[in-house]
Length: 458
Ligand SMILES: Nc1nc2c(ncn2[C@@H]2O[C@H](COP(=O)(O)OP(=O)(O)OP(=O)(O)O)[C@@H](O)[C@H]2O)c(=O)[nH]1
Ligand SMILES: [Mg+2]
Image 1 (cartoon, rainbow, N blue to C red):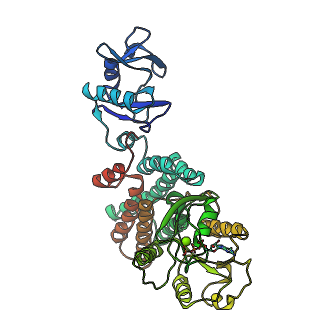
Image 2 (cartoon, rainbow, N blue to C red):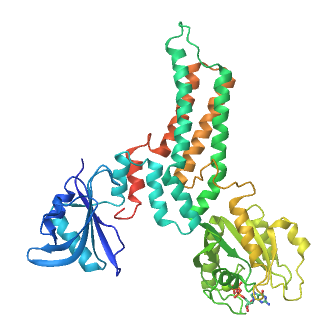
Image 3 (tube, helix red, strand yellow):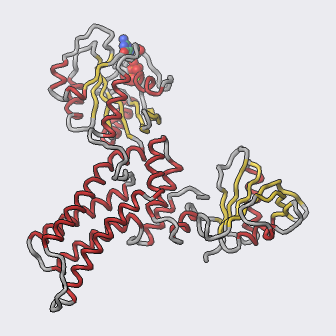
């Protein structure tokens, strides 16, 4: 048993209710010190899982009218006793009750400490615990679904299944190593190879979904670039469906970076409107352009806007050259005006399916743009969340990459007919890399770091 921790579970501000949560051995005893049930009986004498009405008091003074709930461990989130005090939302009652409980001997919880206890008590594995934070921070229903499946254990089941199969190979190999003179049938090279190939295919499958998962979790970092006055800010506003960025017919209107979140058919986008790129003398604009370049280099998706009503400039050809190797879409805007742009020249840089003709003022072509973005995120061969859970977390993706690399090494050792104990080392590495996802093989400081990114009270 650990000490008893306390935290505020609801956002601090004006709200209908506020919840203060205690977890640990002394949860009920601490609640009893500050809470007076209306029934006149002590709180501890009430049955668990019922809301008890009463008051939080400090000496003679009533602090707030509350409902208090006791959940008895181990059937709780942390597997410890948990008490939740539901008071009025608002900074004053919440803080006063919290202070009172701290004074009575509860310890302020660290960020994520409730969930960390759920992990340490074995109620959640590490991937599930991480999913809790992803659920809270999800920006769109699609992102929420990825996290929810992970909390339900889809990824964990997959990892456990793979590790089980690896254990079988290891057991069989060890039998061969430890009792070479006995007549125990161990796996042949051919059998080991075939299991490893299966594992390799599954890991490959997981990585295929990772890009989609990561975008749904973190958002697609999108940057709109183009020379001045082509309609970048107009595009940003159209996608946001509001006038966020200033639009004028004066080139150089946008001087700085404007960043916004939006949701395109369930995909969270972090979209950035930039200062038009051109060789410029204006110092302020120049800073904007420098920052544009930084965003440009980091983006998951680049939207290059051109004006169909003008000739391509040298600057634009340079930009086309830069987006050639990147995940990019090229928009020819202002198709409502007479068109003079040389499309053939553009197609020398980008494929036809990356080119979209739009007119923002006529609201034409925006649907096609949104559809294209969705298709790019989900990929042509995306099959939804069938047997492969979407992995979304960079830490998990890294672990799968390492597991895959070790699988390749093991396959190569097997192919070369290396001694069994040699192959076993590679196989053990796969096992351990996968164990980082579930938290079975992971350093304490990594665990501490993961939970420190949680919000308080979770
Ligand atoms: N005819 C026509 N005009 C457009 C279209 N889209 C935008 N414009 C106009 O083009 C001008 C420039 O638009 P902005 O959105 O400010 O262009 P920008 O690329 O952000 O410009 P800077 O911030 O100066 O780099 C404005 O007058 C818009 O109304 C379009 O589809 N057709
Ligand atoms: Mg602009």
